[in-house]
Image (cartoon, rainbow, N blue to C red; front, side, top):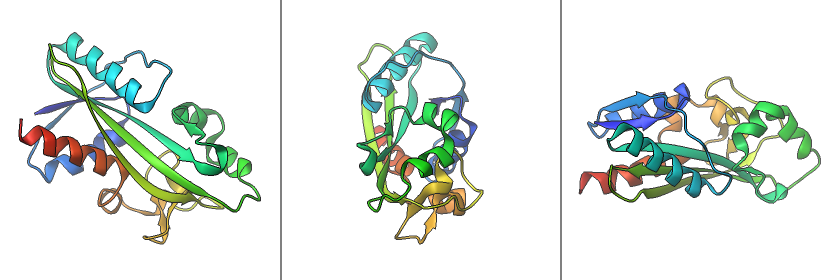
Length: 182
């Protein structure tokens, strides 16, 4: 049993679908924690350490960011705030007339057990920012994150399709492989 600390129900659904392939049960706890301003790795380490000590059990947390090359990595670690304030239309407006639309979704899983130091696992997926929103599946930036290999945005993919190759799948798989040999 792994305890996933998040307030995001969409992340829980995706993680549960990934963990079931490995026969690992996932417990979800919405435990708020202070996120330091820093890298995805620093946020994941801090959150995992805090939650593990507070609950006195092993936990995972995740921090995710959308990194757009033409915007010098923005919104990056501020993705959640930017989603709430600018939204998808704001990002599209920032990229109006920009040809290089390369972007990466990055996911960092932070794992920590009581009385141990946190471990981190980075996963990413490469894509582009679409010129318009497409699809009503997924959440947040999914309708504007276009994956050329799939010919679709994340917003056009079911959870099962997205979980075949997403940034979250990549980071969780790295964690699961490490965890299963501990």
